[in-house]
Image (cartoon, rainbow, N blue to C red; front, side, top):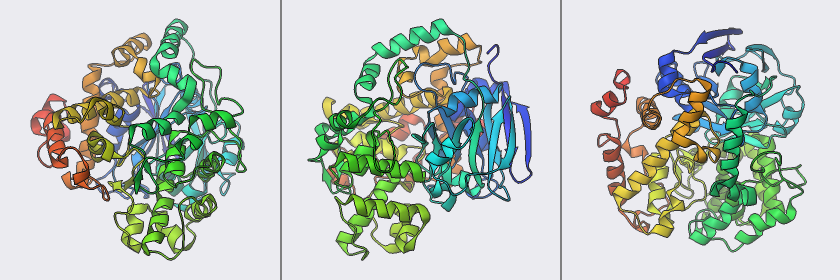
Length: 565
């Protein structure tokens, strides 16, 4: 690579056209790439109130100026308007696709897809261009689709084809990696786009810098933790810290945590997903549904959340979700809702906790929208509860189901969920990793912890750096950006700018303070701090008004005043 990528490749599926144009340098300097640049294009080009499943919705496959260069696993960002929440959505996945896409796009940072194809299609990206071709795998599961093409693949499974509101985009080599949460795969399915096939080699160069960061990564506490346990240890951590939600959010802590956690994974594993990098990948295990790489969310949501303490059964449920192309956090919560609703007499289907066979059957019904229950839960727990009854059985924020970190063990986590830009998400900020050990945070401390994490991750996801590799980047990645010649200014401020830009998008879509809420069934009295005081402190520290709208002074300081709602 001699110059950093600086173009956007546009594909209009309605028109069948492919065009290329330069990204304004001012945008690259201020928004970098990935999340930031995707958000800028989404805000610029998507009309307010546009249907997420309509032809106007924009789906960005976004890279950053460092894509394919950093040690650790490469990522890409899927940026769009969420069909689950109606809010901004950015979701990330790794595997072999991001590096191949970086090589295939050549001097392009983004692949922007609009319109709707008349028939199912695939995109083949190579040599800085794209071709629209008939899809050959419509109806196949995600793993089958990943292995059916020459090149690296990002694709949807049956759930995306059926319009499940939280369908994922899977990437290979065996559909082990998913841009999950919020329904990016649903948007892809609505566009009748089955797969994006990238035929390119990952970028090369900067060997000395790569080696130094690989060593730093491997020696860092995070790198050592991943090498030892990957993310599966989070179920053990959450259980010990008293923040593991279990049995459909009716309990905290899970007696079977050891049976589905890291030691169980090591015993069942027949190798690591990736062993030739500074830090090895996840543990690969065999199940009746196929080989799979269970992550922490698998054990927390499909294990503890469903009160299933059989590791093999939990891993298989994870692989079922992978092949269907369905977000396992939302799917696990949907099954948990069915079990709670059965207990409460809301539905008569008789689903129960601790039943992997029943869970597997319901996941298949959801992915195919079979029956009233499967069809309702395919639109998310919040919509199912509105349609069938049983509100407040399983918590959601902005319509997105929560992962299994229980905020009743750390009030700052309730604030992180409530203010997450894409809905109930733990990846924007995880103060739950600190507060249980440092003592209850004051509202100001909670606000600071959440904001710092949100802004830092906004920078990393604009680079698009792996979450864990990003922790070892000096000066938020400025050293790397200087090395590749990518324009940038004030990276810490860039993170705040990107976060506020996304807030402007959500405000434009009708989101208010009422949506930054503590979800039922979380009782406000169960928190150590008044939730409204937490939210007030957060808004004040952000420079937002009482309704959560960035003030004129904040927008002017961040050079966003021209986007004022």
